[in-house]
Figure 1 (cartoon, protein in one colour):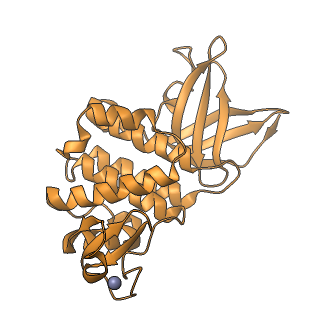
Figure 2 (figure 1 turned 180 degrees about the horizontal axis):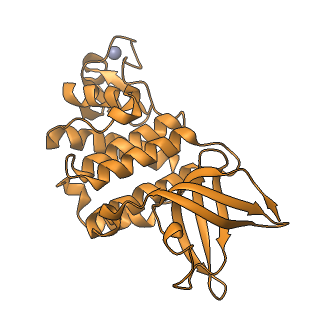
Length: 252
Ligand SMILES: [Zn+2]
């Protein structure tokens, strides 16, 4: 066993393994997504019980064996109790954790994604902004973090500054009102374009500091769905649960 430098991360998922262990997936700034074994973490008296529960955020101490990583300990700075204690918030948190797992990789440092996930969980802990909107902001900013978000500041066809228009799902790009006129597009009003540009360019600490009406949120949701369908290899379990819970109605 070799002790590795401490890593900062969030517990994405945790599943029973062996007799009393847990297999824990962490998103870390330093090592990207990693799987660690928490020995004895299912025994009620284990110090690893609380630190292996999603979405705990903190510093983790890890040892490397010849074939696997072992969790030696952790210092949790935020357990996100407001999320853990609330079914609806937990549902949305599960979705953003699962989406983070789908978009992260082993041995690829992920400080931007970790930061985004942390502020997203903070937003889900409060009542200030609807959870349906948090979901859409997270999805779009995640695509930006991955380098696959379109530019919403200009029309992809004529290059004019974009104020309103539509999103072309064949091109996967936004078009201005005149370029969109003859084509089948998802509508993008002025507020939706403004919102897209905020999501893609605001500092992450200020991402969740706005509100929009349901029509605007619906337009952003349609664009996010189209982009995610293109970027995800499989539908997410927690995404299906959100649909069953009626998220599509954007009720917050
Ligand atoms: Zn145009």
